[in-house]
Amino acid sequence: MYTPLHVSVVIIEDDETVRNGYAYLINRTAAFTVVNTYPSFDASRNHIVNDNPDVVIIDIQLPGTSGIEALPVLKKMLPFTHFIVLTIYETEKLIIEALSNGASGYLTKNMASSRIINAIKEVMLGGGSMSPNVAKTLIRSLQKNQNSPLTKRETQILELISIGKNRSQVARELFIEIDTVKTHVKNIYLKLHVNSKADAIKVAKLNRLI
Amino acid sequence: MYTPLHVSVVIIEDDETVRNGYAYLINRTAAFTVVNTYPSFDASRNHIVNDNPDVVIIDIQLPGTSGIEALPVLKKMLPFTHFIVLTIYETEKLIIEALSNGASGYLTKNMASSRIINAIKEVMLGGGSMSPNVAKTLIRSLQKNQNSPLTKRETQILELISIGKNRSQVARELFIEIDTVKTHVKNIYLKLHVNSKADAIKVAKLNRLI
DNA sequence: ATATTAATCACCCTTTAAGGGGCATTTTTC
DNA sequence: GAAAAATGCCCCTTAAAGGGTGATTAATAT
Image 1: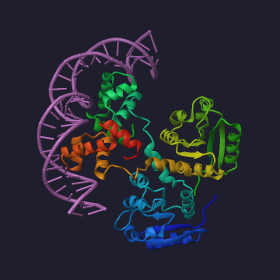
Image 2: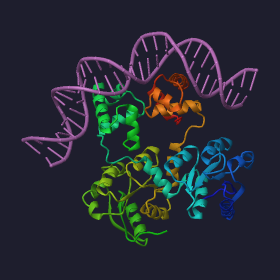
Image 3: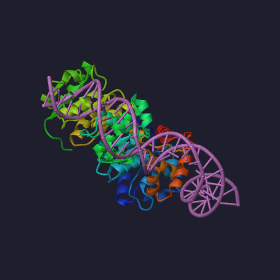
Image 4: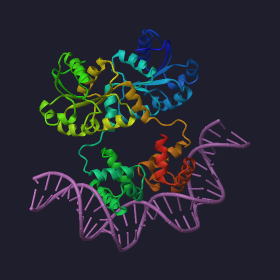
């Protein structure tokens, strides 16, 4: 694997011991240099653009601005920098927020240290990196319930409705009458025990029917 | 890392050379046994339940039923088996389809062979596994456009609308008047050059504004 | 073969939501 | 202190949603 020379890294992590541990680990690796470390995003604010790192390792739970909130701001300040979240939290919500806010990687702190180095290499090559638990959580968030009470057609119709199409648009798209769509919608509501579009979508998403 | 003994693997892959290569590689690994290989899902259909593998390595492009179509069927036949897709294709659509159809891993064929072994270990431990390019594609599909023409509030409102809430529900949720929601919606439509909810959601999703 | 489920369509009806227009105020941000 | 963002209040018309009741056909499972 080819790794560009002189990869500069900044670490944002509030625990001093952990922060120094990572810094040691990264500095020990040939061609990797930790150019600066900060105990919080707020502390990094006026310096990090000057550091101009290739990669930022950032924790989620930080004093003041959280890592999640910091990401879009950092991304704007350093548009060509890669961000790797390194945290103990692995809830679906946090993972999706971090990745949608600009992180290229999401690692949990119980990882072998070699994986941190690997992750840096991977994101430097334009890839993404996740620990297995994170990958699993993300994959699970994509997976549909195999025991859906809805039929194929009902699922299909609810999916179209969930992306904002109205009944006549659904009818046109599926080459059926609007009254047929209406019947399906009524049956969907019956099965999901709801009586509105919004509730149906909510229940369906909660149970991964769509 | 602890690995349970006797991990049984089935390979579904149409190219004989590749198939035998994987089989050799996996059999060479202690505690891993390839119990059977098939050139297609259709060929495996009547035997694979009897093979009862812990892990199935499956290609996407197969003669007859594609790997994507095969996944939900296999998942039903083997509810406790882990599936790893191993393919040359890495489009967003295929990746999301494969993962939402039940795959626990998605690897591309240009990977070092050790990663296949690692992936099997990871999914056996209940994790997920993706190669960096796949992770990047998946992450990118989550990322929002940083240059959205919409303001924070407009984005927030469009998000609520996109999950099926109507204006009065949005108003209640954000503790504002329904007329304010209406004004925001009007401005959203102006900015996105649309004049309906469905079109706004379509344009916004296409440009990752929501 | 035959019951069940899924999918299709057609009317009735009332209420709610959506969309277009214009305008005014306050709060935030640069 | 100008500009952008967020808030709110009217006018208006049409489109959509939701509830009820029913029927026919196609697919599928027992």
